[in-house]
Image (cartoon, rainbow over all chains, first blue to last red; front, side, top):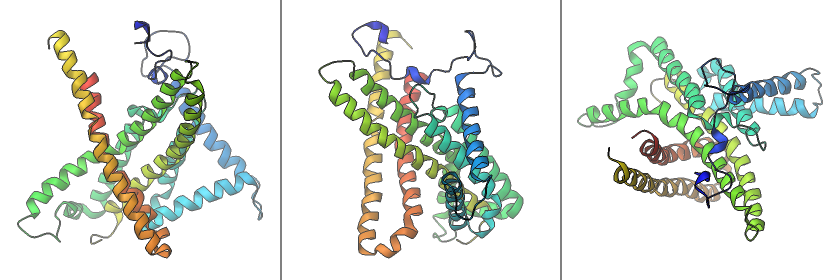
Length: 248
Length: 78
């Protein structure tokens, strides 16, 4: 659209284009792209923090050790509180999800980098894994009893079939909202940043635009952490359906 | 679909779909505002309910995201 003339200098959606890392050409499933690069970087960053942080385990923790410990404790508390005591068994998975999303979000905030979690393809993979995992786990642990969750026993008998249909629909919409929430928030935030970056090239409004960008950048930092938190806490809520006691 | 008119309809429809975001805004504000009102009345119980707050916000927000999804579908999939 920038080619039409008169429009923005930087197109706000250009930052989300998936490009091959080496040379040009079509993107196949095995092509290393900028998405792959930043996914790998997120994993490397997590590895570095956790390995370096816990290498010299001191009683008085170093800075990186206390960050690693705080995150561990925070997620462990959350799993125990939300998913219940039986859910703690699945803590490593939840911790992995949280760290991965958090680091992918935060690395995406580096200028000229690529926000992998702004792509529905990435977040849908994470959400579908949670959805399938929870469904399989629930059926394996509770058997047919897992389906009782659709039969709201606290509602009047006449309403129950209608509620069952609604509950069933809302159950299958879960992975959609779970994944689109993360991708949509990240994408919208980064698009807004680039829209203001486009305004900054006009001399008259550039001080306002740069101020707004600074403010939005701070907001995006907050959104990155909150969205990682929301994704994991919803994972815990879904996990509770599968492993928690039937009457909650 | 036929050309210009369909394109116009698509863009207008996508624009209209974003009205749904206002509803999500009302919902999220309602959740957060009521949480704050409750938290100020009983600050000692507030900390234990932040998880519920975020889950509530996430559910309210999900409906706004569906309107965003419809806008995307109109723009790129219809």
